Structures are given as C-alpha cells and as structure tokens.
Amino acid sequence: MKTLGLLIVFLSIVSYGFVISRSTKNEAVQSKELLRLMIHIKDQIKHFNKPLGDIYTSFESENSAINTFLHNLCITDWDNALENTENLQTSSKCKSIIREFGKKLGKNDYTSQIEMCDYYINIFEKEVELLCSLSPQKTKISISLAFYAGLLLLIIMW
Amino acid sequence: MNITPKLLDCLPLEMKRIINNYEAINEIRISKGCPMGLTVGNKTLITDYVVSGDELEFCLQRICKSSMHTYFDSIKKGYIPFDEGYRIGVCGKAVTDDGNIRNISEITSINIRIPTRNYKVPKALLNTVSHSNGILVYSPANIGKTTFLKALINHLSSPPHNKRMSVIDCKGELYTHKNNSSIVDYFVGYPKYDAINMAIQNMSPEIIVCDEIGLTDDVSPFVECANCGVCLICSAHAVNSKQIMSRKNIRKLIDLGVFEAFVGIKISHGERIYDFKKREDLIS
Image 1 (spheres, helix red, strand yellow):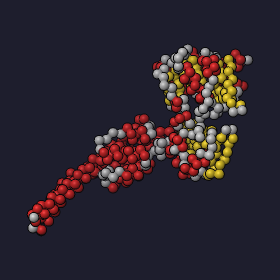
Image 2 (tube, each protein chain N blue to C red; image 1 turned 45 degrees about the vertical axis):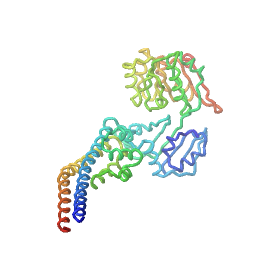
Image 3 (cartoon, one colour; image 1 turned 60 degrees about the vertical axis):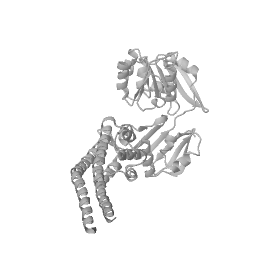
Image 4 (cartoon, rainbow over the protein chains, first blue to last red; image 1 turned 90 degrees about the horizontal axis):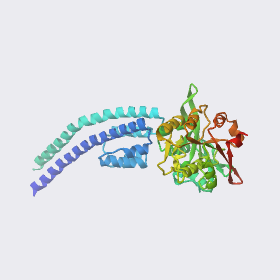
C-alpha cells in the first residue's frame, strides 16, 4: 500500500514537471504567433491601409488561444482581450509589450502607425527570440527537477 | 427615428438619449466643449448637452472603426466615409507644410449629415433626363443630389436602357447603396481624374457618373470623356442656374457642350421641386 502511495506521489510530481514544460513550450509557440499577428497587422496597414477589424478577421492561426484572442479583439480593446483570453500563455514582458502596442494601434496616421508597428515588432521579436532560445533548456530543467524532486521524496518517505 | 443602429453605436449614451427625442434629424453637430447641435427639418437647435473631449474622441474612434490610419487621408480632406450614406465632416487644427495639409493635430468638430432616405425621384423625370447626352444635377448641400444620382444609376442600368456605367465615387457615397448590376462599375476612393482615365481606357463605359465636380481648375478629363463619346452625369453645388453659370470651371464645360441637360433640385414647403432645363435654355 505504501509503495503504491509513493508511486502515485512520484508520478504526480513528474507529471507536474511535464505540465510546466508544456506550458513553457506553449509560451514560445504562442509568442511566435503573436509576433506573426503583429507583423500581419503592420503589413495589412502598410499595403492595404485596412481597418483593424478587417485585419483581425483576415489573420489565420491554428492555435486556439490565439483564435480566442482574435475573437476578443473584434469585440473589445487589446487590454481586455489579453485579460479575457485565459489560455493565452506568454511572458509578462511580452504581455506588457503587446498591451502598449495595442493601446497605440489605430490612433494615428498611416506613417506613424507603420513606424509604431516597426518599433514594437523589433522589441517583441527580441523577447520572442530570448523566449525560444530558453524554452528547450527550461523544458529540460522542469522535467529533470520534477523527476529528481519526486525521487528525493520517494527516498525520504521510504 | 431616421438614424440607423450602426451610426447610433458610434455615439455616447447621453447623445443617443437626446437624439431619440427627435423624429427626423438632418444633422448632428458635435464640437469639443460645446453644446451639441441638431438640425431638424429647416431648424437648427442647440441642445443643453455639452460634449466633452473624451466623448468626441469616443465618437471619432467609433466612426473610424478604431483605425485612424485607414481614414487619415480623407480626414485631411475634411470628411470620414461612413456606411449607409452618412456624410461625416471633420475639422480641427491642421499642420501645414508649404501650404499643404501635412497632418491634423487635433479634431475639434464632427458634423454628421443624415441622408434623405424616404423620397422617390419621379420616374417621368428620370425618363426625360435619360435621353439627354450629358446631365448636370445641381442643388444646395443636403437637398438630394446624391439620391438623384443613385436613382439615375439604377434607372439607366436597368432594362430597357441597360447602359454600361462607371461610377467615380471619391467619398464612397454612391457606393453605399450599390447597384446589383454587373454593368455598373464603382471606382471608390480613386482620385477623380485618374479614375475617369482608367474607366475610359479599361471599363468601356457608355456613361460616367461623377459626384461634386467643378472644385478644381482641370476640366480636361471631363472634356476628354465627352470627346470619347462617353456621356457624363455629374453633380455640383449651386442654388440656381444663375449660380451654376457663374462657376468658372463648370461654365467651361457647359460652353464646350459636355452637358446637354440640367436638373436643379430645391425644397419648397417640404416638397422637392425639380427644374429641368436644356442647354439652350440655360445659356439663353
């Protein structure tokens, strides 16, 4: 009975490690999608000068969180859309960049909008690069940590 | 009420409440820090409701669909195109460069003109006019020139006329009730003269329709159009035929024989009156 209990505890800790690693991977994937969205917005303004509503609906993503975010964008502003998209996973730094970007979107003339987009895309791109480069390490660490923590607990409680 | 939900959505709650008290509004005037003005029938009313800067910004953002970049060129020209035939004029503080408007630093006033929806142009008049080669429709602002043009487009593109038409619609006002016909082509938002040349070269129209002419000196595209055998149907601002003749650029076109028929529109005792004239009558 004791062995079974310990095995369950061990497996729970290890699976928690996997959950964290998956969320780290999602963070990178979704941040990349958000970057793609920002570039899409800039391109659509630059080449077609389209209104934002049309730009949001013309963006295609296979990520469900990004689709929910886009849906929210069509009915509310960026701040609320970020708040209301529960499964959107990105770093807090990325979120604050996105928030600022959204606040300044649609408030100025064509040239200023393109310049503004370029500025935020550059910052965001660096942040996404950092996130992506750290993602494999973070994934590995979280799984290893969970495994060793589970093992340690197993030894202590044996 | 004659205002559609789409426009009402662009207004703050308190404004909607006031507007709801009136049946037929022609204009809504919104100025930062000033009481809201309404034109109802022929009367201009000043309400007690003072519009704040935030409320004006709210209206502006809603009208522009939160996309100022899309409408900035037209804002520099003093208007924002809006669906359903509304004409929205804007003005404020301009930043100029060599006499050209480079930017608008602040928008302080919005004037929303509500189109006249429920009047029909008499069919007999449309029949008479449609046999003329070159038609100029004139009236003061907000009397019904655009509505008349729309009716004429529908009439001429339907059997038995079936005329191929190109509609040069700089402000997107004629396109709002787009005719469902493959023989009517709309050039929306194109510069007027470029669009005329493009239409002649590529769309082989029998008729070119153009709203609000005579504001610039260059009349050559219109003359070119007439010389190519394309009939022109245009509109211009003027109270009467005397005024139309005194407008230098339009006079040039009349003298060159671009227009054969003239339709003046005015309102008397709440009724629209059409004054149809042939070129000879107008000149004499």
